[in-house]
Amino acid sequence: MCTTISAKYPIAGSAKGPAGWFSLDHVYVAYDHPFHVDEEHAVGIDFVREQAGTGHRVAVELTIDDARDLAHRILATLEEAEAFETS
Amino acid sequence: MPTTDQYQGMIAETVAVPTATADAIYAYYARPTGPGPFPGIVLFHHRPGWDEWYHEITRRFAHHGYATICPDLFFRFGHGDPDDVAAKARAEGGVPDDMVVEDGRACLDFLRGQPTSTGHVAVMGTCSGGRHAYLAACNLDVDACIDCWGGRVIHGPDDTDEITPIAPIDMTADLSAPLLGLFGEDDRNPSPDQVAQHEEVLRRHGKEYEFHMYPDAGHGFFYYDKPSNYRAEQSNDGWAKIWDFLARTIG
Image (cartoon, rainbow over all chains, first blue to last red; front, side, top):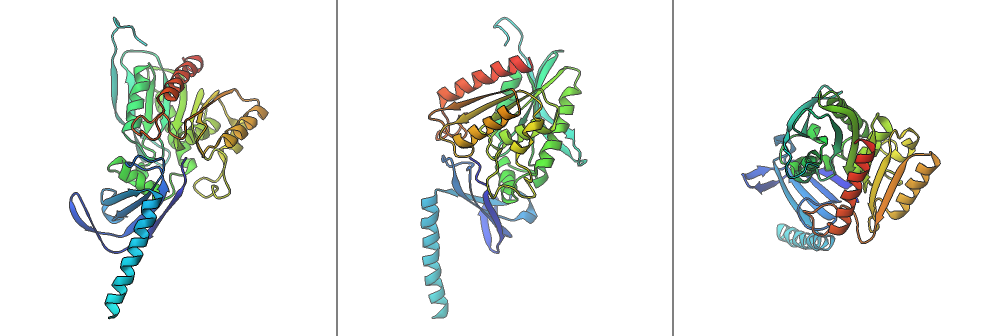
């Protein structure tokens, strides 16, 4: 099924693709048919620089469980980072 | 299909087809060689994009004697690797229905305008392409329609927006051609209930159709490049039904 679960958000930062590092302007987050991972649906996270064209994209596809685990790990890292920054 | 002692040939290449928006849409066009005439097929690609699978089945239809064109419906989102373009299209909510219909019209006109055309053209798609094929068949003059597991023919509560303003099911009265539908019993969009609702609407409007619901198959059971989706037996049967349907409707 096509889920239509998809959104894009502005973001700042950098990503590294096959051609090297590039600055980001958006991130896409979706749950829909994946392009590579062998699942009917997957969480797709695309780090992109839209201003530079469709090729400036670093893509990740994860199962729901792995995406949730990653989200928790990111939040845990953020807590440590914020503690470090305020110490 | 030619016999083993008959010549077989095909031309398959990218062509540029003028569209209603004045852009030229790139399309992969595969046709048998020779004067024909040949019936035609417009293929609407699926949500993962104008990808290798769709280029392969374009050639498959040409191998079976059909002049087949598959437009890049996502070209207005940019050019690049097909999945990079499809990811952008996904993030933007997909291609508007009215644009799909007009791009379909442009490709229909292209096929019918060829000196090798019989004038008979079918539309076909899988996944969102199945929905788009049904949309095309309700809005354009086509001779046959093949809808493979097209989801959102019936809209859910959040499916109606500026990109998809009208549920295709609500256009059924204007369906202009015989319809073949192939679906998997384990699919959730469309679910077996939604397929049954679709059938009821077709019957109510007195439309010519045949639907086939495959057990032990879900969404995308033709996709031999996706082991989790692919179901060989069901796919082989589905393709046999496609060839039979096309022979009866467009020759």
